[in-house]
Image 1 (cartoon, helix red, strand yellow):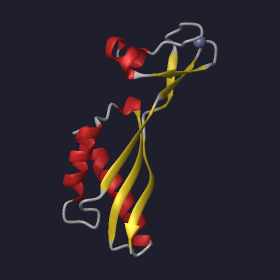
Image 2: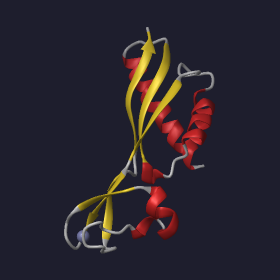
Image 3: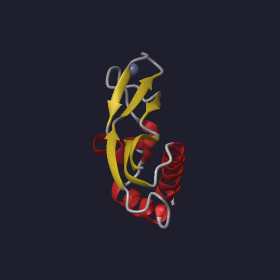
Length: 123
Ligand SMILES: [Zn+2]
């Protein structure tokens, strides 16, 4: 399960940070999630709940910010922003089209990762 693996990684990062600050509890976790990860926020929240059960992050709230994907064109070198609603559902992830020259010879440069931006703790 895609979301569970992500949720577990997020939990481990948040936990390591919290332990460094001698926190008793993690109350909020701020996340940046690339749109091209295909992560479903609702599933991620459920998975996070499972992954953190019985830990210092139990009950922590996940704040998810979706970051749009970016592609770089191998033909003209320009960067375009892509959103799943517009293209991926029709064409599949590997076929994003350059907005400038319409080439499909592109690579994804942003939007395939999830990052923990910040956490809120109780000491
Ligand atoms: Zn191009």
